[in-house]
Image (cartoon, rainbow over all chains, first blue to last red; front, side, top):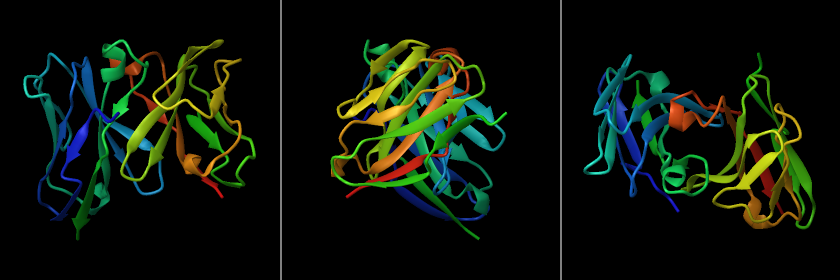
Length: 115
Length: 116
């Protein structure tokens, strides 16, 4: 079953604008991660935020986590054409819930940066 | 340091055929896993291994088999291919349960499999 659900499914913005993607999940987690996937490539780890953290920054990335709402957001500031990719959130919900020892991914947000 | 290497990149199988997707990592990672990615479905965990000689099932294990005889290799076997197994397959590894400790998880570039 899909634990994380990203919103929106697709997002198209102009270069230089900020891009915000949201992720909701259903069960308790230890941490939540965001990944980027360029077309035809593997996933690249962007950032991990633990359940006791509310906000984390990495370069132009800002991630927030609201465990009371079971949601997270990924903000990419000053977007560039190279940011065009699909972005996925992933949680350890399965492991936390005594299930399979792996990540549970959402369906992703496809981000297009218009030059 | 090659990271996580998957082969083949592309494969077309006929229904009922068997094949093995290879995955190798050179980072001495204990944890390795296989995911499949289908359009609109995100990635789903097939099988995983927390160390040599230890494997376990993920969310969608049916029709697949794995073994972990060495730390470096984690092959995924399709026993009797079905059209429903048409997908993109990703192998991933981390030093340990990366999501617990915060270690980076590394993904291979993917294997595109079509079953006709």
